[in-house]
Image 1 (cartoon, rainbow, N blue to C red):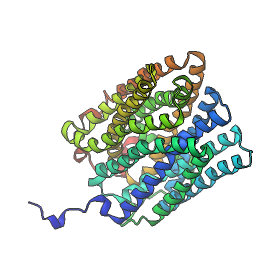
Image 2: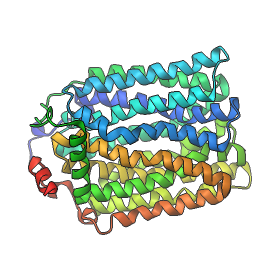
Image 3: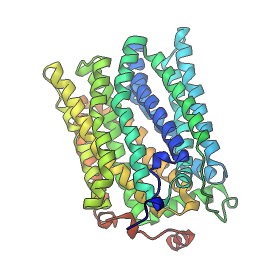
Image 4: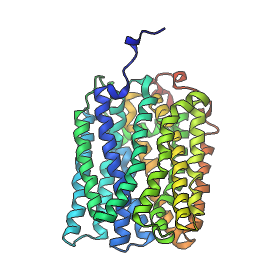
Length: 431
């Protein structure tokens, strides 16, 4: 029997992880508010069309196309925490300009487009810096519970955030709701700055050498050559493309076609997001029972397929709200089973010196497809109609599982069976 004194403390009792966890939670709540407030502001105050709202969604994700270069530049920076703080402060400053402009009746759709694009760029900086910082906060043996805790806080934000956002928009207007998100980024910057790490980053022998393009290509080559990363990237990219066809139309469809007022729409999204919390909590336990790989596959199917409930929504108001909430609930369970396990598996197989470069490559392909999905959603919604497009998104998204079937992922029972990666893995992949 192990000595209780030798057991690691719960993650939330580790000062560094706790500080980062709180910063992450606050920021996630702010994001949920803005995700609802931005399209509602465009629809309700600027009378935007479905195509214009889809462009707004696309611009948030467009900077991810440069993620491979941003991640390569990030790998050369010794202080990843400083980059995380800078990204939060940049996003806070940009968001503040929206309520200021509307306070003086100067707000325009062009400004929203610009803010969406620039905050998206700052998000890429944050997301490519995060993986290298995460492994300094958490031991390899605790990747799954740490990802579960962070995903759980994100899921809680999906429960309360949309409802809070809907109420703020309804009671105080959308610009004020966006101001709340700006404040959340300030608080997140403080929390990240306070997070202390005890681990020393692994040295990368060629971190300061080689041209930007050469090093970016190295990260992309490693990603595409590794069977786990290649399958995970293909699966995530496919599901993201179709899920953004869906998400680009969700608020417009729910507001205009289903006739849900902002408060009830926020409530439906918030109640449905309880599924995300359930999925984040259950993910480590389910992976222990059926295996990490099978949990990833299950999530890859449940996540997109459940959105079909929105496509069939109709009838009385209570039923419309219930179907939107049900779709969000099941989708939340699926996405957390997928994300928690896949993120932990990927953190296990990527060498330390390549984390930001691989993250950048993932952002370029996986997140870079999102604006294309959003624009496709706007175009198909105008051409085919909203409901047929939502059906297409639900059915097409389930095809993502085809990437996993021939890969090693379905056979992965636990992270313990994965060898610790080193730079020799890169050399082998390049040969």
